[in-house]
Image 1 (tube, rainbow, N blue to C red):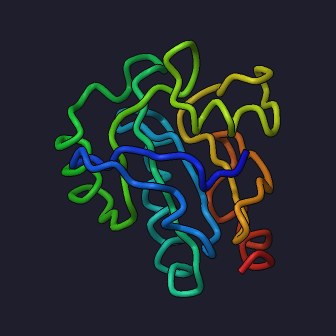
Image 2: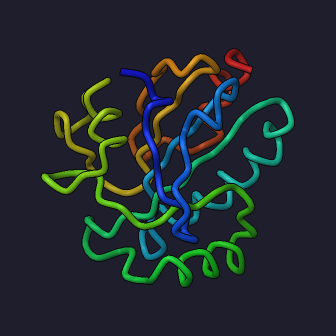
Length: 157
């Protein structure tokens, strides 16, 4: 299975194929607006500004599975991220990342490398890095700050 086989839903409701991102390095993150890690949006945006022209795409997927830290609607999430963190990278429709209703993309990502809780995602702001050919590179737990990944991102770009 390839990362490019998955389709995701934009906050607008439009279905997007990850194949649209072939040739880019992808940083896929489950996010939340009311989490202790929410300030990582700022560093994710700075990372995006630094590397986007060289081929980095950051794909954010809001999730409300962890202590109800993403209660808002898709529109509210978009507004929150733009107003508070100046986010310009794509923030998709809210999804689930664990359990029976987990989005197939996150089932796949979780299967590539176990985290602290085995296959499941521990918390918001777990990050998955994918190379330009769609190959899984690594999984980063929420405590890993976005700029701690720059040497790996540089090597992939």
